[in-house]
Image 1 (cartoon, rainbow, N blue to C red):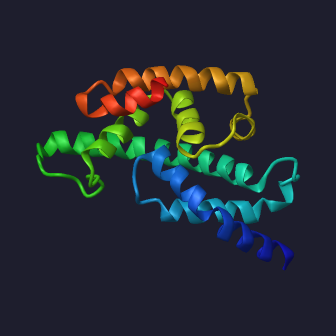
Image 2 (image 1 turned 90 degrees about the horizontal axis):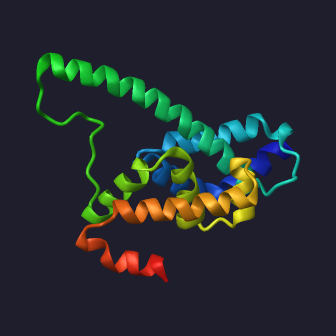
Length: 176
């Protein structure tokens, strides 16, 4: 009974954080099932939570692992769909294709997703979700120095990817 109330409280407190993390990490808004999976796993493995870290960072770690698994499955699915597409020479969009409302967001999502995995993780956690270096180090199981260095390098890489004129104001903000 105690675990039910605890996970309900965590869901109420951290649902939006988990949701936003997964949106940025996966680059899609269709992640409600994955958010639920995070809290189901959190409930299932609550006995392993030792309270040495914040519950939010523990849940984000679970979300990250679920997202990585989802990306692996999606990659296998994409390879299969690509093979089928080439066989049938279909030019139309597939159901999982999506378009973000805002062209700038779409370019940002693409640039973030094109970063190597370690850079993408740090940009999402530090730059978008505003986790501290310490919280990020707990989630990624890295040293704080590695988090800071990787964040710096990932921002440099992101700047190079966002070179179009529509990003000039954003890049000026990053440089300050």
